[in-house]
Image (cartoon, rainbow, N blue to C red; front, side, top):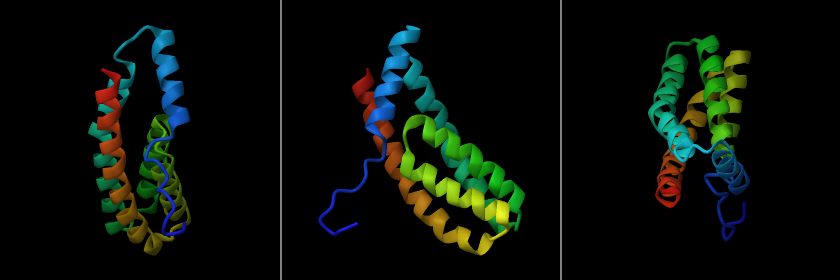
Length: 126
């Protein structure tokens, strides 16, 4: 990305719009809030488990946990973080664990960005 290019948003606006439509359709005013709360509680835990799996040399656990986090990220529109999780999933599935620490470091930074964006979303959703 060029130095003057704007970074990709932490949350895909199209996915957020879809979530808002789903919230309206189901009539549950807390739908987005509940999804975000689950991600806030589980996202950091799953990323920590990914780091533990790599430290323990457990490719299967890495692949499975990264797959789950990838799905959670995609559901909320955290596409950049979902892509990082997909890379981690491939590392686990192929046993290429030596590539994972750098991806995990980047994913931790992106998770912080996503969590901040989710807080902003909740503020606007109220």
